[in-house]
Amino acid sequence: MTNEQSSHETNVENENTLTNRQGHPVTNNQNIRTVGNRGPATLENYDFIEKISHFDRERVPERVVHARGAGAHGYFETYGTAGDEPVSKYTRAKLFQEKGKQTPVFVRFSSVIHGGHSPETLRDPRGFAVKFYTEDGNWDLVGNNLKIFFIRDAIKFPDMIHAFKPDPITNIQDSQRFFDFCASSPETFHMVTFVYSPWGIPANYRMMQGSGVNTYKWVNNDGVAVLVKYHWEPKQGIKNLTMKEASEIQATNFNHATQDLYEAIERGEYPEWELLVQIMSDDEHPELDFDPLDDTKLWPEDQFPWLPVGKMILNRNPEDYFTEVEQAAFGTGVLVDGLDFSDDKMLQGRTFSYSDTQRHRVGANYLQLPINAPKKRVATNQSGGQMQYKVDRAPGQNPHINYEPSILGGLKEAEQVGKEYTPQIEGKLVRQSIDRQSNTKQAGETYRRFEQWEKDELLANLISDLSTCDQRIQEKMIALAEEADDEYGKRLREGLAHASKEGSNQKPLGSRGGDKAPEKAIEKGH
Ligand code: HEM
Image 1 (cartoon, rainbow, N blue to C red):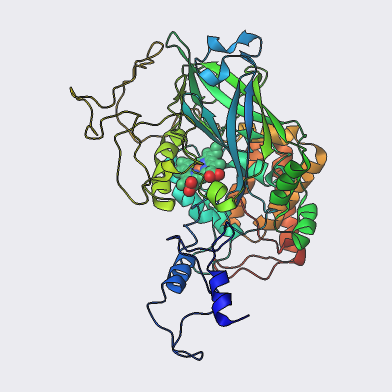
Image 2 (image 1 turned 45 degrees about the vertical axis):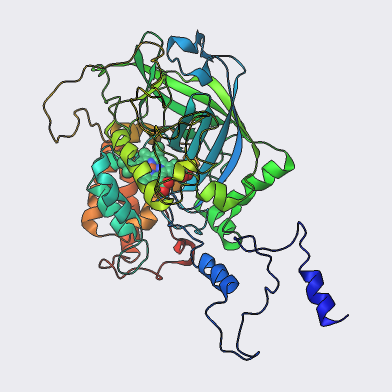
């Protein structure tokens, strides 16, 4: 074959021909263009510069929390009822109304504290975020596996995350910083009790519960609201790990939860969760010893039963991790008609935070990406900004009228369906914590509900990490445990006294790391 023939053949373009993003066929993907075959390189080598400079930009910033995750597509099917009642008694949200109605969903599971490639065995709450592509537009239910949270006021979130993330100097996660924050914020004690028990290491994503955690509202056709909490119950059952089991998995596999989800779906074993709600009338409930807007509290099941409202099945893996999972953007502000916010201060703070971070992390037009865009029509007058690739124009819309109102045409406001919900709000503007804090009572109840092995694990894990902490921090944590439950407090006090007799692990702040016994050398996410 002559040189002429060969270059002619490679120029024949077919459907498998490599091109650059300008559509030019790439004839040589092995060698950069140089002066002679030993260099130097020339700067007008467009293909090379395009390829390498795109590579240089392959990452977007990680999520500031929940960086490590896995996702899947599926659908939600409604029962049309909430327990024994028609669901319309409580909400007019269309996706819940008609029994058997299916709504497509995308779900992202995650761990919270560590980076995008951290082991999935770490002690940490797990994220459980669901995007429902409803006929009325998107609804995001951005929850966790556990039903409560560490704090009840959004202003504390950045401090909490700083304390839980690695030390700013050593870049090592430090139990002392974690417990320093928790001992100084007693509302965290209920969540600490869950997270240090086996419930802090779910066996995988398929075998864990989910919860919206914060209190939301449902609004019916008469404009009447109720308070609501959402829970996901796995049909696969619930499984949590001991520290030893997690260490064994971590020794050989950093990705076991992602792998488990992906492979189950590929095998056709589609994971399923039932969605249940708890409902309260929309008032302060002075008869309760906690505030219904306090996300550190469980709503007692005997008073507020779990009412099944539908089920979710995940049956399709993403085609591309970055496009779908990494660029997915969930937020608590993303609600549809019939669903509303409560005055839960965490929920209100979160609702600003998500779209704010996503404009930074993914870009101003993140809602135009297929994974984030609703599956119904979008018609706005928004335009411009980085990476806009289409205009949200209605078919036949006069392109000159990109404003509203207008006599000449353009988009018009929708009509209000159902009676508008217009709560009356009055009071002094203050910076005050809520009354009825009851920081330790439910932690005691949770401790007493644990099985013996769960109590033993909780205590062993707490003693292991707290024994490395300053004694003042230990004393505060013991006091909280004693307040919660006599046995819990006694076991923690005795365990720490014993650990200190064995030889104190206490170190000044910042000097720890790399000095733990092998079984404890596993970093603990929280
Ligand atoms: C992710 C803020 C509390 C569940 C995030 C992200 C931010 C954030 C900035 C990253 C989002 C992104 O880059 O797309 C906050 C703030 C909170 C708070 C300010 C408190 C005031 C909570 C609570 C829960 C939760 C209580 C559980 C109900 C999640 C989940 C994700 C997430 C599941 C990951 C979503 C995904 O998979 O993309 N949060 N968060 N957060 N947060 Fe929160």
